[in-house]
Image (cartoon, rainbow, N blue to C red):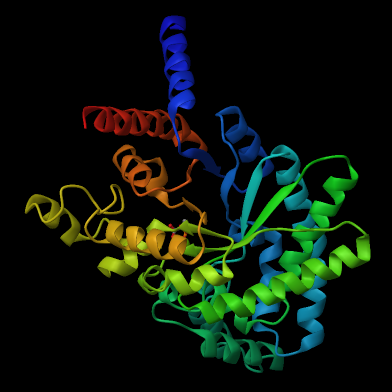
Length: 368
Ligand code: PEP
Ligand code: MG
C-alpha cells in the first residue's frame, strides 16, 4: 500500500543521510544501469564484460582465443571493437557523472570454446575431415582444462591472448571520447580480474595505459581512467601491500575469494556436503551467503590494512554477492570499505543496512 511504500522511502532516505558506505550496483547493460540508477546506485561497482561476448559474438571470441593465425585474430578483434564501444557508450551514458567500473574479460574458458567431445565425434564420423576442423580440435584439446574456474581466466587470459585487452581498453577509451564530445561526464574505471601477483597487474596496467595514451593522442581528448584490481585470491589479499603499488583501487570479489579460501567450488554449493555441514553446525550459513568473518573476512581485513598502509586513502569496495547481504554489509562498514556493490534488486537492502551499520557504530562510540 501507499503507506508502506512511503515508510520504506523514508527509511531509505534516513539511511542514505547517515551511511558512510557508498552503494553501487553490479550491472552490465544500459537497461540494468538505468534500473540501478532508479534504485539509487551511486555508480556501477562491477560491469562484467563476459556476457557481452555471447550470442553472435561468441564465434569472434572463439577466433580470438583459438587463432593460430594473427590475421584471423586481428580481423575478429576489429569486428568486436565497434560492438564493445557501443556497449560501453550506452552504459556510460546511463550512468553519466557516476563511476562505472568496467572489468576486463574474465570468462571460464570452457564457456567460449567449442565442445570438444562433440567436435571429436563429428570429426570421427566424417570420412575426410576438413584440415581447419582438425586444427580446431587440436587447439581445443591444448586449451582443455579440468578445472576451468582455476584456469586460464581473468588476467591470465589477458596475458596469454594478444590484443584482447587492447581491444577492450580501446573500446572503453573511445566510448569515453564519444561521451565527452557529446557533452557528458563519463567516469570509466578499468578493473583487472583474478590477479594473484603484482607482476601480473604491472604488465596489464602498462598495456592499459599504453592504449589510453594512444586514444588520447589520436582523439585530442585526454582519457584518464583509474586502473584497479579485484582482490579475489588469497594470495592477492596477502600481498595487497605490493599490489597497491599498481592499483588505484581494490574491489573484493568475495565469490572467488570464498571459493579459493575454503577450497569449495562456487558452482557446487548445492553439493551434498554443504547441507551436512549446515546440519552439523560447521557453518551456520553458507559462506557464499554470509561472509565468513574468521576466514575470508580476515583476508579482507589484511588486504585493507596492507593496501592502505602502502597507499593511504586507497579506494576499496566489494562487488561479490556479499555486497548485498545485510550481515556482510555491517562487516564491510567495520572493515573500513568505501563502497559495496550488489545487484540492483538488493540495493535497497544494502542502503538500509549501510545506514544501520553507521548508526550502530555511532551508538557504540557514544557509549564509550
Ligand atoms: C567475485 O568473484 O566475487 C566476483 C564479483 O566476480 P565473479 O562473480 O564475476 O567471478
Ligand atoms: Mg570473480
